[in-house]
Image 1 (tube, rainbow, N blue to C red):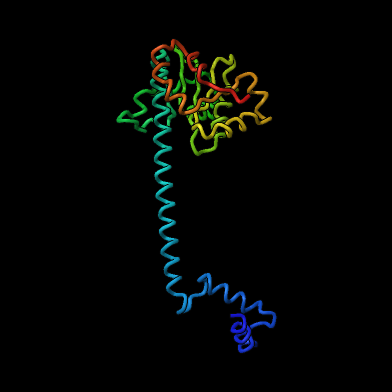
Image 2 (image 1 turned 135 degrees about the vertical axis):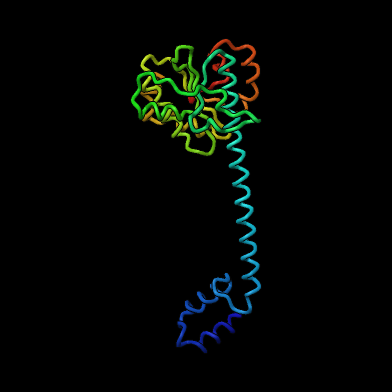
Length: 238
């Protein structure tokens, strides 16, 4: 093959280079089907087909994962809403999730129609209204705030909880992240960010794994009297 390449390079030397760089590049382009000639046309078509199949499989996997994550998010909101009501609290579900459905239940059915404003600015109140689940007592005080995380940025959920913690002057609202088990290390890393430490000392954010919440949900509904029942499964970053 080397002799053939040398002979071809010599034959077309005016168009190629003496150091074989040009013909080497040309052969690479042909071999990878970037340049199509009759001899590699069949390989080119096969690679196109393989690429299409691979792309389709990747897209199908992404659609399945997106559906799973959306379902898990709605499931956690539903369970949190049910638990909150069983503990005697009023429940708020994020404004943009009221139409979501979990097992034939529209999430908005378990939520207040309007989130009480405790004297916050319009922008802050709007941000807090996007927190996934809030528990309120009978007079509208915030008791618990829950952000359900999946593939989206955990930090964005932390910021919403931080906005709430900065606005509740008596620091009576407990803050939680609810997340898949496999994201536990990421949650710890985010909660240990130096920029959050001063605020988290006054109102710490704890987290609960999906598996723990699913496992203990029914027992908490049955035996819990207030939000303190959550303490048994909640974790801290340190």
